[in-house]
Image (tube, rainbow, N blue to C red):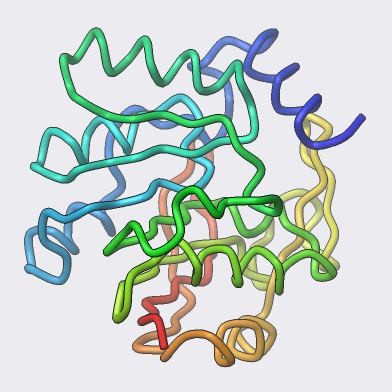
Length: 211
């Protein structure tokens, strides 16, 4: 089963409130970035937007948001949420490792909240290249992915299998620095703890600027 089929299955068969990454409340890191003025309303792409919670919330804060996800099932949830909340988001079914040329140089901010750990090392340069292409000159990229230090799902090794059957890749800061540096200025790279649906997680966070 490829990632598209896997995600469609999850969003079709698993109740939204039990999908581990589907959190209805906006994350503190994102709220804090807005409250501090680190990011301000702008044209934003929500990478791997899932059911659209963060896209719709950002739209409510004045951001012009396009959400992209590989799963058509997820995108339908996102569109339904935007209608219920009466927020004008655009949602697109697309593979972030594929052709994103229709949106080249379109965004000031790219949000990657827990997407990169679904992308394996051999595909990551293509993913980062596509994010670079989506952004305008000097655009900001915020990435958050599971750290190798995180104790979740067995607590050892880079590749770990979740209870849903997905396989994730847990990264070190050194790997991420080498991955991002060719295309982005690394403003900040840190390992922090964030809340999860059941337990907190150790994650790598990166604030990056398009070169």
